[in-house]
Amino acid sequence: MGDPSRRRIVRLLAAAPSSVTELARVLPISRPAVSQHLKVLKDAGIVTDRPQGTRRIYQVDPAGLAELRAELEGFWGAALANFAQLIEQHDKETDS
Image (cartoon, rainbow, N blue to C red; front, side, top):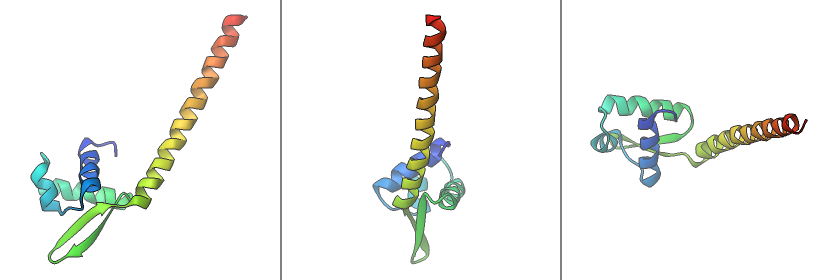
């Protein structure tokens, strides 16, 4: 999710399921690049796909997004706890 193109793809797929061709029409990257990003997102469990005729339709996987959100909230919680500890330590050192 660190790549801006991947974030944009996820935003587009959150709005509506789409094919590689449909995504490539609105993105400033090639169809092969869109396919590569979708493969990474699929491997990470963020998107799923299903066949529709000769194309594959991609959509956001709500379970995958929930896992990602839980991971990010864990990182954020740890960062806030570390920040609070640094502030407390600074306050103790300042009061001494």
